[in-house]
Length: 201
Image (cartoon, rainbow, N blue to C red; front, top):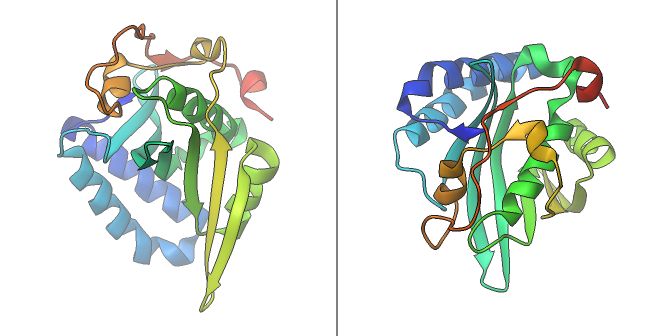
């Protein structure tokens, strides 16, 4: 897992566009343009605790795009998953489970560490999947004029040996740390290596 830059714009926006289209053909025309523009704009900005775009790669192929940000009070810092999209060919591998584990582990490695991970999901089906299969917990479900906002969280927890599956570039730790470079944190190798049997639920 590493920070995405403007050089990754084409691959990142193509992944997001294809994923939105695969999820809901009716929404694709309405949402894909706005989301890809937002992500493309973020790639042109310097990564910081207020916003950072991360990418999961395997053998140079982009498999997932995550937009992450820090928020909360000094007493309860959180790492927020603002957006998350996986490659359409990865559906059978259920990357959501692995990415949920990674973001919880990553939250503990920041400076200062986050106490939990949060996200807001607008598709009840996706929310149900995250709750049932990825160990997220629901805080509340807001319905307004046919639209949904499901607020989810999961604890920040360091998971031993997760770096065997997902390595994290040290720059990604520093980008989301509030106190500059994360001294004492060893950089982990980038890239993932998991078989189909390991990736399935």
